Image (cartoon, rainbow, N blue to C red; front, side, top):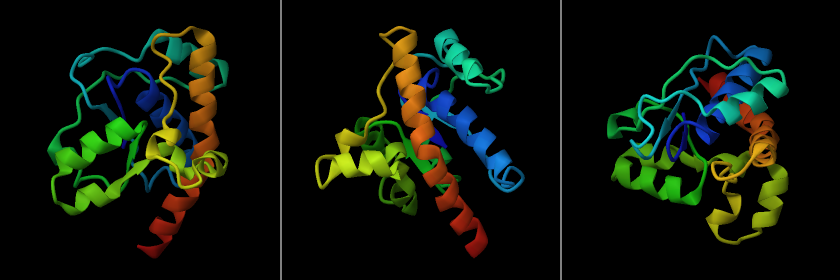
Length: 165
């Protein structure tokens, strides 16, 4: 599950990219990908049209979907919860309380080798996926660049976990 603020930009973009890559990797039937938001402010709204445009421009199909807020019960039901920012990760860990689910929360960009090299022991927020909400098309392209840069690492991680099962 990918998680951002309102579930209309970053997390649904990551959901689409991940689902497409899992299908291409032959894991589509084994992996369920969804997305949520920390906030309920966009609940019921479709993907931001600017996010949809960026995805279509790179050849992705954009499904009809509506934003929803993450619930505490969502966390134990997912093997991997990918936060778009360190703020989202902290909120998810609080929501998980002391359950094993808190250990399943990871930063999305922690799977991007180039982003990890920037981190070099620094604070987790250096792995934040840029928020395109207040920007134009170029910010949505930058966000999609960051999402695509980490997707192969996520697919490899999940492939190893699926093989172990």
